[in-house]
Length: 402
Length: 147
Image 1: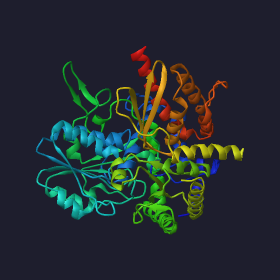
Image 2: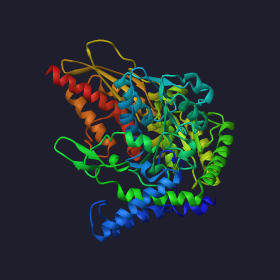
Image 3: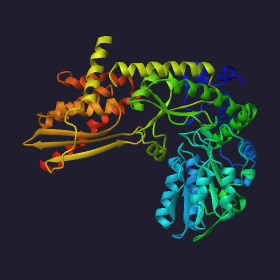
Image 4: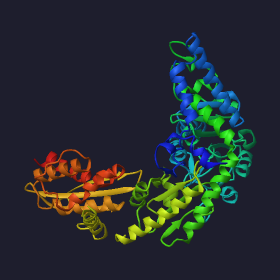
């Protein structure tokens, strides 16, 4: 993969000096995704499933094709691929609908301290409302979820296993290939937060055999405001919608109504049409780039950066062994929010804070961290500059008395 | 300009490393307000004690970046001894300065002037204002309850 050439595909990387190391929060948007969405707004900017005129037909056709493209991308069926506002709303739908309707005080929900807030808070609410118990997989000394530790908390009471595929702070991959069959032996369902996996991992929901899986468009070269809920057909058929209104019903009577089949029963209101079409274009782009190649590239960059960082005095790296492009680190004695302004002045975009994952930050026993995340459009020169600025930042803060 | 920056930097670092009036006091003489910025982790509690219309004491505690913590210390130093009216005016002036709005040049913000550089870092405005907003809430409680 030629990252230099790839940079040319992203307007923000050609219009200003920027080393973007915050893809784990949001990826940049390529020209062709922007163009695809512009085309919708310019050439057929109308609603789907409603009009019977030509441009409405075209919008419906493109929107339908977009869903199929995304379904194929994760090896799901069309009916199993639900458009949502993002991974958060998909994960909330699973917890609210499946969780509240199926769990009781005798049940247990296995989660982890590596979860993003969007995969912990919905289940925390389910636990509060149903009396079900939240059980945390103990993390190993590196902060990983291991199959061994998962076995320790899996029980006959386990009804739901809600785990991240890849941690957004530590970059670790959860051994779901081993965990999912174990969960199924106990008849538990498995909900997977794949928001950090989808940008650089070929996801095969059939092979993985997860029951639910969610991801967001804006982390995988697509637009904001759209995400995907995957669910096994037999589960989605039984799952009640959580939002009601136009387009999701077949028949409306005075005192009851009949829902459409999945995926439509979960999608009330005018959907994010441009975003769906844009996300499908992002998926095609990702497939052309090849997720494996992206991952190998970002790991090479991360490795190079980590090797340099761990040699530096006054810098602590929390996840040197992560298997993705994410580095969680701190300049010793410098609050990450102070540090991040220094990087900002040098046109390096980093994330500082809790990363919407306060549990793992508490586990690390730090107030917050810096996070650098490398992606397809980062180059070896970006790593070199990043390391130089880390040294400059460390020296600057030492010089002013931190 | 460089010198100016250095001076300001010294004020901020001085209050960060040696915070004044730090530590909360458990007493009904104080009104207390807590603000947390969950995205970065700044977490500040500010107290004020007002008697006969005069700010007798200001206390603060919490954790966060240098801008956030030092500004709480600077705030306390500035406010003790002010009457409620000028405390509110100084707070308004400070917030206006940080947010790049017109300020009253006649009001002396003393060490708090150091934070005018923050407006060049819009992402840090929250850091520089969190303690002041907490203080403002305590003032509001005094005016609501006692006047």
